[in-house]
Length: 241
Length: 246
Image (tube, rainbow over all chains, first blue to last red; front, side, top):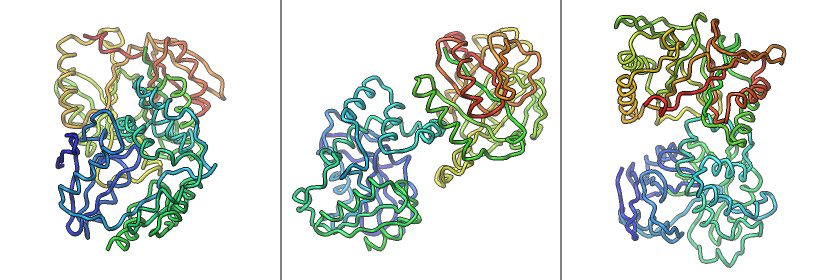
């Protein structure tokens, strides 16, 4: 593992593998360098790219300096790019960004308040369970996850759930994405989803691809939100080459 | 108080049959129900005893008998879960433990992992398996004698070493059989027995750890357990808290 300091002094732990142009993998909710689908994805990508995986702030080996702001996470990303000395970013790929653009995933009105309340009481297991329920994972599956080693990894980063919601601010309201907000993102973007993913995620991916000025949309058959590296890697390699 | 609900093996699991999707879902719902009630702390299931090895330590000598095990004295005194590369590593840690406590019988049993149930891929980057070290009760333990301060301290040092090595998952010492209850289900009908238990011939197949106000409230969870797993024998065992032993 290597360490870079973000602009506010926070330590960001990362690891770099492979050779070639720089490719930074950014984890989704509850994932970190130790856990999540990016762990396996780095291997095939590293054959053609210099791949950086890192712990987003509040997770794993990275620090977490209060107060949180989305801008700090952007600075973390800048610090990683500077450490690798490669600009500009010329392509972007996203897999199932969790916007809610219609009524396919109702959100409880007090969702964030309840998460913060549980965090204040250090009830991390309940935070993870509440998140899992909100993303429509069946209750029995959440029960089984509690028996698995992954549960400790999930609860260890439960403190960052409010951060991810902050990043999504305003885009989990069930309203269509406003084209104005996305017009400036002219970078070439690949928006992906899985053919077996729930409707709300698939609608989100399709909506994002529509509002981005320079995006293409691709559905990976047979995949869900926890994508398989073997399914995703060829699509990413083709896009980034 | 914390209670361990330990269910016993049945012929199907001993034959190596993996649970049906329906059974897996019922267990998941039971766990989630226990969690929503604020009681659930931890749990694990065990693979068939044929995948295990039984270690007998006597006079500093170790005898290893590969599974399957015939049920003999299967009352559990304590357990420890380790995350190691293979069964030999688990045997080595069990031997370190026996070197501290003296003569003992310890079964080494692989813990059911999500990939055993087809619920996840075995992570290529983490080639670990969890094993449960099941320490059997003996007469001294059943008499209620707690370990000496020197032994408690030595075990604490061993656990620290296991943590540093990234091996340690959990360890618990159970209170003797006389503080326990056993619930036996037949055709869905429950019979509750008070300990001590002179006969304990059923192999342990897994456990759930709950935080509850009393052993009676633990007994109240037994019907949900039977609803998920069918006709089972379930031992309800209060745990020693580390403060009791210090």
